Structure formats: C-alpha cells, structure tokens
Amino acid sequence: MLRYIFLWDYRFITAKGRNGIYSVSTATEKPSLYHKKDAASPPAATVRLIFSVFLITMDLHHIGYIVKNADDPTSVQESLHLVASVTDPVQEAKICLYKNSQNELIELIQPLNEKSPVWNFLQKKGEGFHHTCYSASHHEMEKYVTENQLVKLMGPMSAQIFPGQQVAFFISRDRSLIEFLLG
Image (cartoon, rainbow, N blue to C red; front, side, top):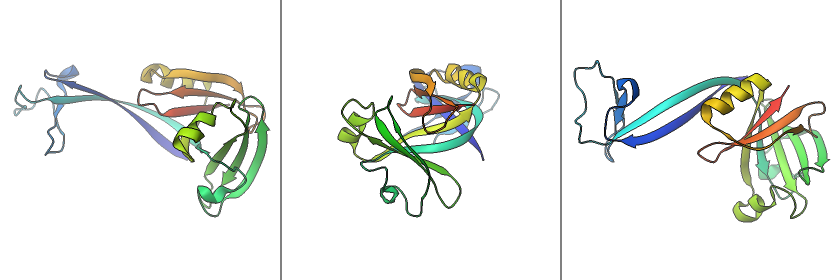
C-alpha cells in the first residue's frame, strides 16, 4: 500500500514568501494561495502563512500504540489477529504485532518496567497512539530525515519483532514519532 507523507513547515511572516508564493489567513477565512504572477495579491498588512511541502512516498508498515496489556488488542481495535509476539530486552517491553481485517499491521507495545523508553508515555498520556512506521531503504530514510530535519532518537538497531531487520526512530518538528523499518 503506497502512502504519502506530508510534512508542513509553517512560517508566519509579513512579506512575500519564497518564489513569490504565499497565503493569507485570518481567523474568519480559509487560507488562500497566491503567486507573484497573479494580478490580485493580498495586502501587505495581512499576516501570511508560508508553507512548504515535502512529498516522499514510502510504504506504511504499521501503526504503534502504547498499551497496558499487549495481549489484549480490544483497547485499540476489535477483531485483530495476532501475527507475532516478543519480549524486547532493549526496549524492555512486550511487543505484539496484530493484523486487522484490512490487512494493516498494528503494533501494541507494553512497557515492562520503569526502565522502558515508553514507560513515561504510558504514565503521562495513558494508552494511545505512539508512532507511525514506514518501510524504507537506508537511502530513502536518509533523504526523508535530511529534507524534514528529523532528530534521531534511537537506531538503527535490531528489530526483535521483525527478525533480520533494523529499525530507527526519529522525531519531527511537530513532535511526531516516526519509525523506519530498514530492509
């Protein structure tokens, strides 16, 4: 399944944007795009929202959730079927991989103790969405990381739930956690 990743880079400025493309936005209207060749351009006094979009195509591999009990998938979604289950000594977590009726993979991560990197997430935020994982080559990952200025958290390291493969974790500017499954 091919998915598109959009990373929006928002900048509020009062002058024209790069390449003359800018957008006007107020609290009462939807943003409108303009280009420098357009006859009608927004007044200089308005605040403009500049954005750039980086479009990278990669395969969505799975969605990760932090849960109290990885053996009970009903806290996330009904009708999940167990694909694999491991205890990861690096993450100090029990990890169960499930497949839903649309053949999409869902990873449930249960921290085993306070040493687990996801322990604080569960304590502070409770059960819920944690990360998105994309299947990518090293080259695709490096290109995406560079273009989107991601910060590396961990990896590449061995993926216990995916034997023979490695994973790397990054965080985006909007604090989204992104995992790459490197093949």
